[in-house]
Structure formats: C-alpha cells, structure tokens
Image (cartoon, rainbow, N blue to C red; front, side, top):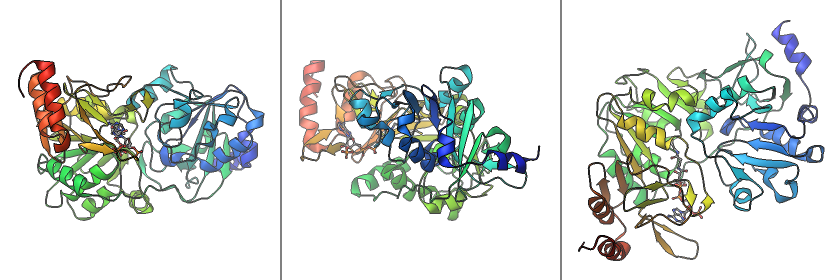
Length: 438
Ligand code: COA
C-alpha cells in the first residue's frame, strides 16, 4: 500500500485517537518539543474513559493537567524527570518518580524495563517519501516510537525537520491527527552579575578547539557569552539552547577541531525559542542522535578537550553533588550529568574536564539565604555526582578543583568559594568536624 493511502486510512480526530488508549496502558509522551500538547488535552478531556493509565515522560513544557489530584484514579504519573508541572503530584504521593539515567531510557524500552503500550508524539507532516520527522528531539522519543505497541501522532506543520535519528515512516504510526499549533518556547533567561562571574570562571578553563556539553539556563548562556574570542569550538551535548546559535553564526562554534563527528553539532534535543527551532530546520551542521549514544561515556570520551558544564543544588564538604532533590523532595532528574562528568574524565586525550557551576547561595521567597556549599547534604537528599567523579566546582567566587585533594583540602577549597556571609559558619563546622583550625 502506498504511504499516502496508509496516511489517509489512519487519519482521525483527536477524540478518536485518544480512544485507542485503554485503562492500565503505559503511555510515554514524546520528550520536550515532541510532546503532542493537542492530543494530551484531548486525553485529559476524555479522562472518564480511563482507569490507571500510567504516564511517563522526561522534560515537559506542557501544563501537566493529568497530574491533578482529581484525576488520580484516571492517570498515574510515573516520571523519569520532575519539572514545574509534575513536582507537586510526586511530592504529595499520587505521582511517583523512577530514578534512571537519561541514557538508559532507550535501553530500558528495548529490554522491557520500561514498557511502552502507547507512544504519543508530535511529528512533522510526511515528506515526499512518507517520512515524518520528530523535529528537534531524538533522545528517547525515537526508541519509544519503535518500542510502542501503538503510536498516536499529532501532525504539526510547525515541527522543524532535522537530520539524524529523527525520521519515522508513516507505516510506523497508528493514528494521525492533523493539528497545527506553535511550538512551546523557553525564553533565554536574563543573566545577572553572579552568572556572568560564573561564566567567566568556566570560560577560563575552555581552550580553543574544545568540545562542549552544556545544560540549559542562565549559567550555560553566561559561559557561551564569554567565549566569543575562542576558535574552533565544538558541541557534543545532551541538549543545546539559543546561546549556541550566536556562536555558530559568529564562526566560534564550527566543530572543525572535533575528533568525533567532525564538522557536526551532536545533540539529543534542542530547547529554546523559535529562533533556535528555525536554526535547526534542515541544518546539516546539526545531527540528532539517540541519548544512549550521545550520553554514552565511552562515546563522550572520544572527543578531545571535552568540557562538561552542569549545575547543582548543593555540594557538601566531600564534594558530593546534589542536583535532583531538595531534601526528600524530587526536584528534577539526573539527565546526563553523571554520564558527561564520567565521559569527560575518560577523554582519550586525557584533557577532558567536568565542571559543576552554581551560584554560591540561593535566596528563598521569604529572604532566607541558603548556602549551596554545606558541611552535609540535606536529610533525605540523593547524591547525583559522587565524590569520586566530581572534578571542578565553580561559584561566582572562584574555582575549586577537587580531584586529587583530601577531604579536608576539598572542604577548604569549597569554603574559599562559598558566599562570604557564610564562610565563618562553614569554617566553624570545618574545625568541629576535622578537629583542627581552618
Ligand atoms: N536548597 C534549597 N533550595 C534550593 C537550593 C538549596 N541548596 N538550591 C536551589 N534551590 C531552589 C532555588 O531557590 C530555586 O527555587 P525557586 O524555583 O522557588 O526559585 C530552585 O531550587 C531552583 O534553583 P536554581 O538554582 O534556579 O536551579 P536551576 O533552574 O538553575 O537548575 C538544577 C539547577 C541542578 C536543578 C538543574 O541543573 C538540574 O536539574 N540538573 C540535573 C540534570 C542535569 O544536570 N542535566 C544536564 C545534563 S546534560
């Protein structure tokens, strides 16, 4: 049968498509921009038709209405990341969290640890050969489509077409729902003096010809804005955001010095504004690969001068990094942090470095100041990057290199880059704990 015929036969309304979901099904949403928000709204509107539908996804820019307490008998969120829309249901117990490396998600889909009865995804319209495109995400969505028993696709002509593990033939899809809508956007954050200082310290460790992994937010953008005079930078990263576009356009990021995938930006997904999505559309410099490949530490290690930059919520005196929990509360997920910390350390040229960059303090809404450098991690917190893997910690007050240092030396180096208002308190803790003067 021609692909055109398959497409016509499987085209339906959103209501018809979500009726293909059965009670008890395990449903995986496309990641990030490939989340089919129109279909999800239809599924939530149809909630009375379901009991115990399990919903799993990583980063979501959607409303997360299926996590509302009134739907707890209809939908159960079992997240592999927590964000603004999903933290509450996990904290209150009617949702739950599965600890998993992002890089393991496609592997778990293949080996059955993560069943996919239904994959709901947003795709571009088919091209002349009958291939739709996942757009700017290939992390786990590509594998979710391959593993799912049923695939329900929202077809949106605003989805860009990108190269790599992103093409899906119409024969792999069970329901096509044509529904155009603007893609969700994440505006670049404002960069303040603290982040600028952190960006400068990070940039001081980045040589010409380095390959970078950066997360999202003000710190990665601040680092990028300090790199305008570098040459031949490359990208091998879980994700990229708008900040990368400026440096590609300025010729700073050209990927020509990369030792793996020379001339290509390698990522698993992009998240930012329409400017970034337009930049990604049919751009041969960008290649999206699945996350089990991109975040594999042995693959990362093949990049010479690999520099990984991630952030954290807390670091204790031993260098244990907490990035995903605030006390017992699940705040986010591990993403690729540990994979990139390990991959950079394993870099075959011996020049890889990993940086955890964070402001020295956070200020709560009531004005309370909390130091992110602490003697101990909070009760109930989970370590993300352990003390054996951690390397550089950077705050707006400087750089602490922890590898090669004793516990006491680590504690001192960290106190030296803590906020000045808490250094005295931390020094007292140091003296009590190690029975020696600071
Ligand atoms: N104790 C209590 N609260 C804290 C805290 C601490 N030590 N540190 C931060 N917070 C609070 C902040 O006050 C802020 O609260 P608000 O939302 O009410 O304003 C919130 O936590 C977020 O802090 P912020 O510093 O703005 O975090 P961020 O948005 O820059 O994200 C991480 C930082 C660590 C959560 C994020 O980088 C992450 O999830 N990392 C793990 C995954 C990863 O590294 N992925 C990339 C790999 S490729």
